[in-house]
Image (tube, rainbow, N blue to C red; front, side, top):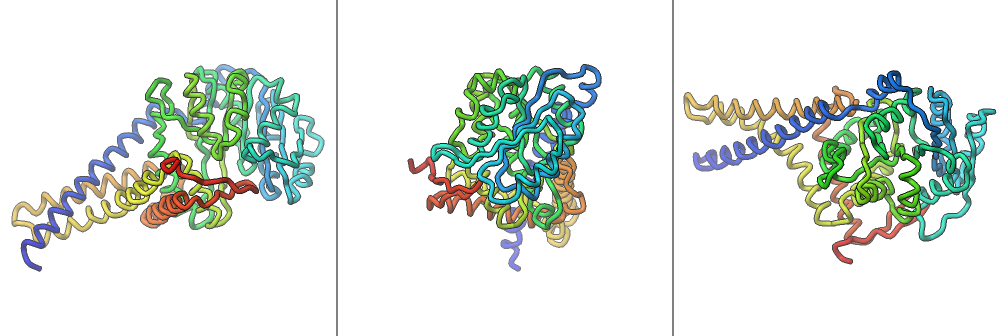
Length: 409
């Protein structure tokens, strides 16, 4: 290979390697800062023991064809160690045996109530309308001091609600959401999901989400939203977000707009969830999440589609290649500089992945699959951009929703 080509290649690789050091150095710093300053849901157990939380909680669960999940959720709610608790299950246009499974699981527990919804108005999103019915049609909802909206495909640790209420009060919040610990059973959950979730976290860093000033970045997770009932009423309840495909982000923005204190914490295995059963559902679900979190902007989605494989694949590979290039083609006595830069970049990358996987309770042995995860996550971003540019409807919860870009409106 001509020497000038080697020099050009070396300069390119060094540039990419330095970029990797900067990027993954920032990632490591932000994770360490987050771990130091932002507690997890598990820390609420100690708070609850020191100061037992008070206040009646109503758990409202929208359910659409959840016969395969509802039994697990019900038993986890029956096992909660918080005694001031009622549960409203809202069966939203179910076409399976969700009702039968729920009745068997509930047995004679008087804390549970079932509401069946057979129609969803056109101007409402299905899940949002079901949650609204759970609040308005149940005396438990209207009389509660705290309202917890969760999903039917979740599992709550026996101390989850008690710990969360304690955290809400101790941190003087009006709203608390938890980022659930996700299942790692299927290949895409193990290889793709950690990267997919990280890319969402990049858009909404916990340090920014938990601020209560103008720099707050509004975000919440609809799998667990704990409201002070007074705030929920002040916002106008689910009517405030009635047509939102992602009502959690819509609520977070509304709460930030009202200047009310809110928090988002890692569940740390206190709340577990399996979001999707198949790879097709996974892609469709995350395209919906990415589209709404990107504010329906095609350019932003395409930028993320490029950024993900660039930072998570190209930069680490460049860091690895620069080591042998420096060794074989570097000037005698100085080749160690390039080798050292490459090695340092790889160490930062591996440390960043180790911290990310540890925080999310993903399996550390799946870290080598991060390359695969980055490729498919970039592909999901790209497909979301294409669907949005074409106006392809979003299928969710038994309904079809118009999917139009804000850039073209």
